[in-house]
Image (cartoon, rainbow, N blue to C red; front, side, top):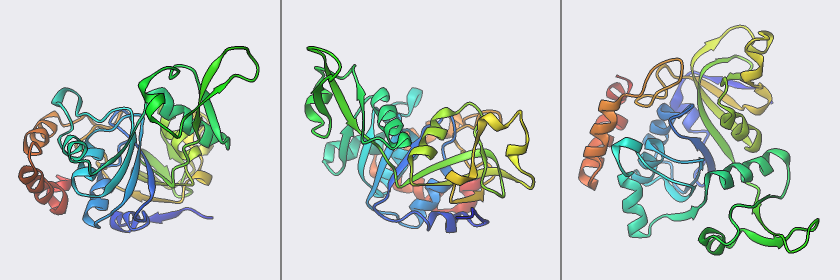
Length: 275
């Protein structure tokens, strides 16, 4: 299927169906913040988020806006700006199905999905409370050893991987550099939707220096140009995180009224969101 280059990010958000299982990265690589805001504006519902491997502002916004039913993650925080307030409220209210994990467990599940395997074994979970409460994780005996229990994790196969990159081309090749988790997400997911700072008219895979950091377009269904598409979070090599904005969010989102005001000012007001 050819990659569709979409000019309107709202049209890209419309390709995300309610109830989809979605893989998202945090701020260290390519958080698709412009696309997340578009999902909130379109009123997405019933999403199952897979944090790769932790969640931050994007996840907190989607939860607070009522877009999320289930969350698979090893943590959700605003880092130095404190706890994720909407996430905390949802957990306390019991309105969120939470599948607690560890960073290695998330990666292992995605690696199984990437390789087309039904599960991936992982040692470090043996005897943990997580292994006891995650009924979808299975403790088995190592068939190649003796008295050697190991935990098997089901493959994680997201319906969609949503990412933001510095550059794409019109064939859907995405340059992610050394952000290997984004490659893993794209390989494991059924489809990838991406936003990019710019769209290159040539072919990124023709450049031997860039090629090792490119997700081939065969894994990508649609792309849209979104300048500053990760803001207020940072994008390595492009711009830094807006710490002042994150501090403002942490303060406003402490209660539901402040969170609603934040959405009005920075999500539903598209002009303000772009500034």
